Amino acid sequence: MDPLAVFSPATRAWFERTFDAPTPPQQLGWPAIASGRHVLIQAPTGSGKTLTAFLYALDRLNEAPGKGLRVLYVSPLKALNYDIERNLRGPLAGLQSEVRVAVRTGDTPQKERRELLKEPPDILITTPESLFLMLTSPARDVMRSVDTLILDEVHA
Image (tube, rainbow, N blue to C red; front, side, top):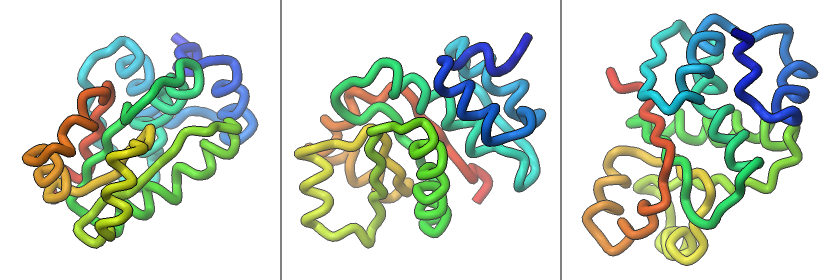
């Protein structure tokens, strides 16, 4: 099966313009993710794990936009969270997407936290500690619309 067959024509065209071919994690991961299964991706650094985890969700957000937080990314490494946000800019720009991404950590100012509740992003990148605080407060209501959860660096 062609692993790119699960994507919309726009996402497929962007990927083919940008990369030579899907990596092994992408070849195995995308069909499994698209089928709705829970997926564990274990691969070396630089093998395309982040794009494997996010691209199907980005495609769905572009093809079926909705209100509210849809993708929740959790990593215990705050620096990685900011790297992930930066790394998503390429695909989002390439897809000409209006998908909104936000990072919430313990360093996020209170004003930004309130804004995240009033106007939730499509994708929230956070730490386990910040997620715990959200889940144990009225902010948990923002999580009701999440349909994709990405846990990264589970060994850290």
